[in-house]
Length: 202
Image (cartoon, rainbow, N blue to C red; front, side):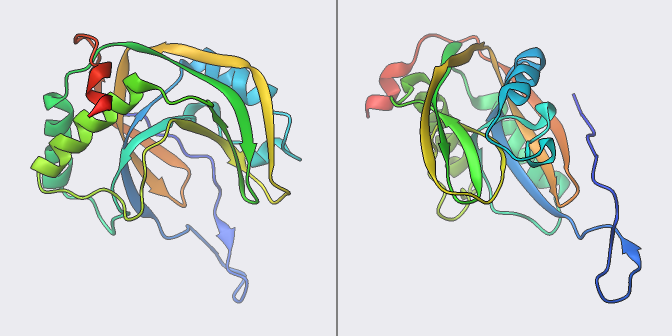
């Protein structure tokens, strides 16, 4: 399944006044995505932003599981290796839930106060397969279950919310064209294994 999403228009160069497309970088990551109706509800209810333009589009809401450094280009071999990682991962369906909204000085995200052991186990399975393939995670990346809602400048805050979640039955591989507001879903895998939460304890 491949989805092409683009909503950012060309922007004028501040010196020449000529319009051009921003230079894209390529970002590849494994993620969970909420069902689209739920994503639309979340976006509509996100009242911490000054304008709707500060919010991520519902189609872009996701929970990053594992991510690589940004690339100048994406080779067929890299895509093949990442898809093989997805093929190798077996994990059980699980529920994910968020009960807190945390705003930093640049973004707002939903989080949960307690660790989700099933999410941690899925991350570990993907990370083990990635390392076996000789690929490194993004420098400084630490996996934690959160969903960014958008970006803004403002004072940090923490706010409890009524729990929001869904039953996770799949994970995806996303190719994000950074700077062009475009996500391509280039792989999707169903979760159909046994409950493996104990893996997160080791």
